[in-house]
Amino acid sequence: MNLHDPQVKQTLIQRLRRVEGQLRGIQGMIESERDCQQILQQLSAARAALNSANAAFVEQYVAGCLLAEDSPHTRQQLARELAGLVEKL
Image (cartoon, rainbow, N blue to C red):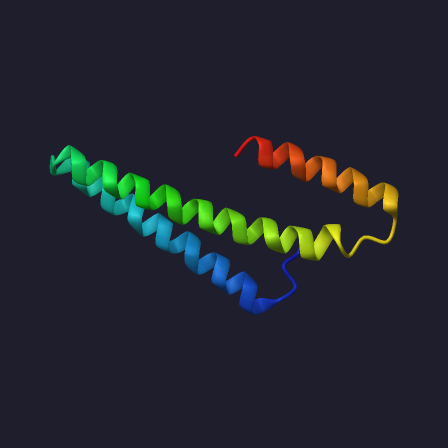
């Protein structure tokens, strides 16, 4: 899939960089032996941010690939593939 809209692409990259920063912060928290509850809270926040990025990407996939496909057979195949991917989330 190609992200044709540069703004969408940039937004997704920014979200992923934010998650990357959160994960580095969590690593630092573990290394400095911070409170377990604080670490769990940050892990939960990082997971939520990654889930949000994932949802935004799926939305772009549907709009850019699934709905743009002319062939009903190919659209159906793409829908099956998407359902398989979402099932693994």
